Image 1 (tube, rainbow, N blue to C red):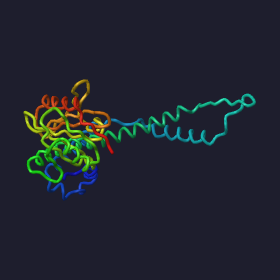
Image 2: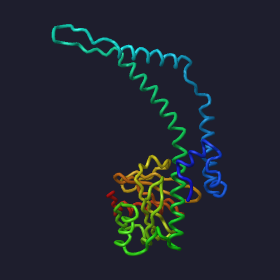
Image 3: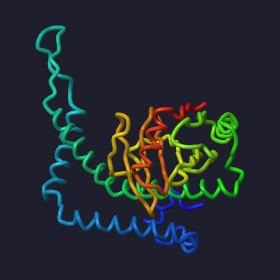
Image 4: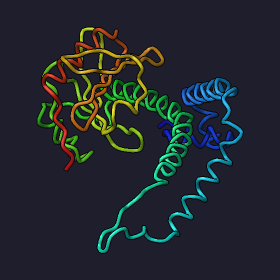
Length: 268
């Protein structure tokens, strides 16, 4: 098993974290080196960006003003039995919220790329393990008819998945770990080689794939890592990930068949 997204972040913050695994696993070392390089480039790109000198003082003044208003008296009566509500300092709340949002977005921009890179590396590793399991077997793989594979995945993941009817011959199904959760996969035999169809309960955007492909009216995201191509397409609350050492056009054909006859997942 390779490092999870959380463990990669620990290693980014502390070089000694998970040193034992990193010393023995070249793939995780390469992934971590890429994350460190990306973090360094992001920091260098933003070195010249500075907040105005008076920003901190302005936020403090506004915070004090808001707290004083919150502790103030009720609005005055203009007529018996009628109150006029005034919000002269509402804009101050908005400016504070905007300042907080800037900080949140800045923090997310530093953390999200590493997590996205780890997600793509995990999909590549899932495909590698699927291909190996298809050849050598294992407790996480089952080869049989569609009903047997569906029952196997339901037992292992608790998720009902219907085997895809198109895109290639379904060789087997596997269960793998993605972001700390068990997910179901189908391995398809295609003209260019095996393709893994991995169904994950994550939004497409969190996988960090930059390319864009239109497939049957849907927008799929594409990426490549270590010679492996991948496509991700959202279907309902799930994302289908087609991963393989095949060209992107062939992968798009497989994905098109898969979403025409979708793997219908429903958590039980």
